[in-house]
Amino acid sequence: MNSSEAVGVVIAINLLMAGLVGVLTCGLWHWKQEIAQITAQLERVSLNPQAVRYGLTLRRVQLAEVRLGVSQWQMRSRQFKQTLQLIQIIRFILLFRKNKGRSLRR
Image 1 (cartoon, rainbow, N blue to C red):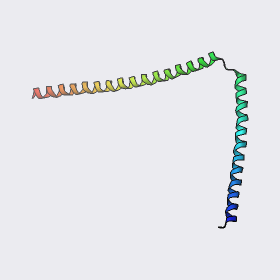
Image 2: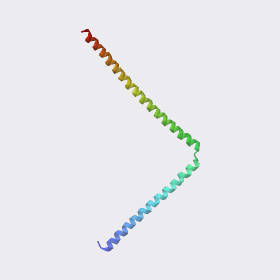
Image 3: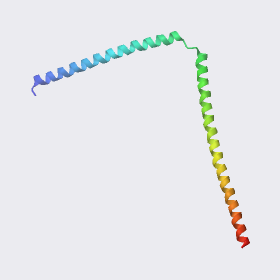
Image 4: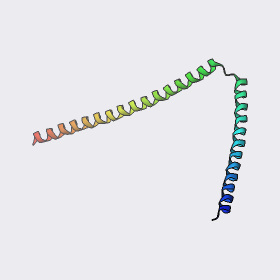
């Protein structure tokens, strides 16, 4: 590659980079305008601080309600397992007594 070809390659790369920078600049300018419009819309709505606090409190209460429901299901599940274990123990005791009575009769 001679020096004139290298200069041509450098010029082509510089043109591509300039074009890319131009496209990115236009995109950022467009985003800036959209952000300005959204900001203006939010300022027009002017959210009431009490309404925001109420919404946050409502979400916290809903989350606590879900947690309580999950805890209740966990407790019921544990109680069910304990009940099954108790039934198995009682069954074992009854079978033991029954077998013990048979061995004494013989």
